[in-house]
Amino acid sequence: MTDSPSPREGTRATGASPTLSAGAGTTMALLVVLFGSFMDLLDATIVTVAAPAIAQDLGAGAAQIQWTIAAYTLALGAGLITGGRLGDQYGRKRLFLIGLAGFVLTSALCALAVDPGMLIGMRAGQGLTAGIMVPQVFGIIRASFAPGERAKAFGAYGAVQGLASVAGPLLGGLLVDINLFDLGWRTIFWINVPVSILALIIGGKVLPESRSASIARLDLPGALLAATGILLLLLPIIQTETWGWTWAGYALLTAGTIVLAIFLAYERRLTGRGNEPVFDPALLKIRAFAVGLSASALFFGGIGSYFLTLSIYLQNGTGRTAWETGLVILPYALGSIITSGLGVALAAKAGRTLLIAGSLTIAASQLVLWAIVKDGDDPGYWLLALALFIGGLGLGLAAPILVNVVLSGVPGRNAGAAGGVLSTVNQIGGAAGIAVLGTIFFTSVTGSATGAPVLPGYSHALSIVLIASAALYLITALVMLALPKAAVEHAE
Image (tube, rainbow, N blue to C red; front, side, top):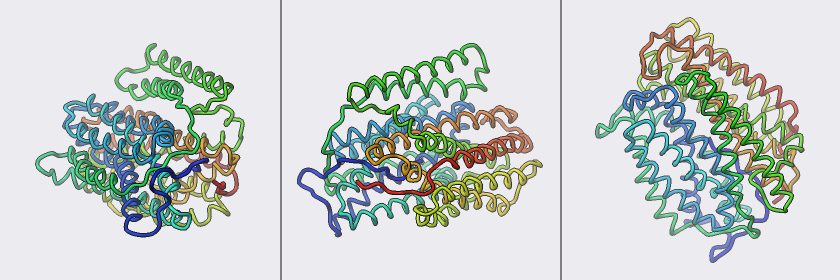
């Protein structure tokens, strides 16, 4: 799940290609970078609908299915800031094409996976390559398009995000059900290969090169410490059903906490030397940003787990096909498209109000869905569609503007660094949500993701997740009361 572009300071176009003017070259360059953004969000969502088919074919357990989705978002979050810095230093076009090439390779390896471990590893590889590719989209648009064309380019970016949110569940369901060349779920990864190769060829010809005017040294030790600490915290949570809570699980949690403490100490030391860290701890002294990190992690923490558990409920519980599951999820995407334009238009006047309204609407939608599924019966399509449509309306109000509202409380000189950290936290929040709420679901239902308990067992498990998730969004709305009132864009 990719976020709104964050402000970056001190960028300029370099090389033979200055800012682009309107024309065929502009259109092709924009299409290529938007394709990269589209593929990122598509691959973050398409696997959710295919999860039951993957579990059945590879014999994956509940924890392995959670890791298949969480590995992508966690690796993406770990790579975003470093990927942006690499583009600033070595050229955004070059890093975009390198990331896209890596995405092609890891997609093919995902499709060739022979066991859950290989698939999880290659999904992490996909996330890392996306973490190299995605930050360049914003940088290329900002550095390469004239100011008059830039607003239109970012408008197209928003439209592509909406399209990807619709396409993910539908395309995933369709590809699994039609079973092209008897490949089943593997086609959701194979489809990336030919279209990405075409984008590579076109991008090599039409994308302009740009770099940052000021080059900051990469903080690779900081990035590795942060990723290691987060992984140690998530590992025992996701593995709860398999491992249970033993001394080893508590030891991993303790180790993760210690590593993150070392990370913060290292970053403070790096800042004191005048270097630029992955995360400047001084940002936490900015109240709006500290609150914003919490609000953002909570908000995005409920989305990935919601669709994973709902997809398994619909397919393993009610017996719907992957395509039918995609059609059930479609109203959520349509609802978000309807309200996203309203949210962006009113963010400068009522950003905080929209965020709170969006979070409360999502909570309400989950309570409506809880009322529909709690009795253990198979709900009809329109009842499910109603609950999901309401949730989509809430997502559209809040998700597109959350980053900009949070950054409104950050001084302009810190906005670029804060935006990168915030985007990373969004991905980490999504992975943590899959870990916690996914574990609640799998430990509440009889059997694993590959088992076949009766519908009431799945209904009971989903009902628990919905109550927990609704409470999560109510807490999120309360936290958002401390955010800035409106989104104010900082000057570049």
